[in-house]
Length: 564
Image: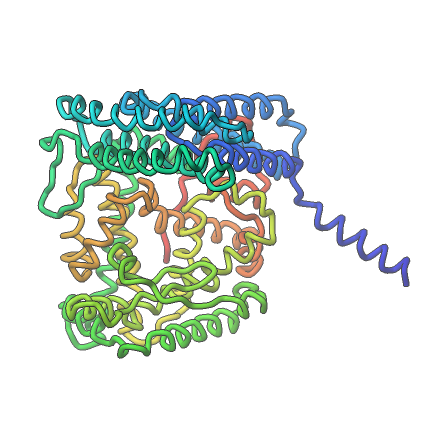
């Protein structure tokens, strides 16, 4: 019996190692090293932090170059390319942040004694408490002089002001950590520094708030929407697309999205006719919005939609959904504050339900219910749960988890969007209202590509983006405004995030067609994708098809945009 078990485990181990990469330990070390540095260097907006990160990337580039690429397996070569790309992307982003930092670093030229205190705290050096209190008091007075001087030289724009304020915020964070390390544990420190620190912290807070508003107001170009962002420009978009291995120019992607958009609009008119509204798709959409459930009934509606989608998928044996994954997902309710930025439910390990609370005004309540009606939610419950984000998270934690370092929305959001396309083609919606719900979100994802890229290219204003979502997609105005604000005026979404949904979905759909042509089943394809974990879809294609790979891999895959 022991011999049989030994043979079994040997076979199992051999099979499990077939797709093992030689770079697992290297990538795990990179992730751990980066995490350790970010924990050690709390003051992120400082010369010390930037210099250490530049040194870190230089060292890792040296390590990577020492590896013989040609001796690696296909998986190893894929991981080499992924890590090399990540190092280049992070170095590029770090360089841009550092350039912005250097333009405004003079706002902290008083802070050397504070940085010294923060640095020495890491090794627990006993401070000269009397001198430190004096330093704190001196800096407090310097801040008043700095404020008066900077009033005469405002920053060029709000981005510089925000960066300057970020330097002070970062300093405060490090200062608080150092202060709390000694406070109450060291009697002399506590006696001397307590009041001095409180006064300095208040002064830094006032100074930070001043910096945030100290820019030339004529640099603000508010188009009436109240949303102030900053387009990154064509050059930056192209660079970001290169890092994502997307071989298309922004203008080509807009043209592709417009083609998808027109297809969706034609299908919406078909569904409108089925509902008896003729060509008036907006009237049909209004009808669908009013199919909302009453307050308190949304969680059950979400559960019913989840059951329907999982049954539909499992009856067709499209993918493996582990029983533990089905057992362990859960629900939470989204706060009213978060709903102002994200008016629709989101998902992952749990589904966050967006629906009215008692303290919302009448209009906000109606917009929330109408925007989250069951037919609009019909294609997105499975997007957030199974086989979408929840299943992705579940599998990412269990298969090639080291590749989580290569997180990309084209894989994460693209996969979830791909299922909306695939299920539509399999007859997932049964009623014209369900079809309209699916099409509403599909056309929304097309619109995201158009409005986000046109904004980042400097061709559209935020108000034009809002108008497109209201007039051409059918959003409630408040929901459209929240969507645009989330896209351009928060740190939530990088420039390519909004276009990653449909673009990644089309990549997955094109790749599936290629794999089916090679004799794979849909279930084989779907299960394998989730076991490969994060990576740009073109590299996933190379991995699945075991294509020859070069060290200086460049994107060439002109994936099909035919999704029918």
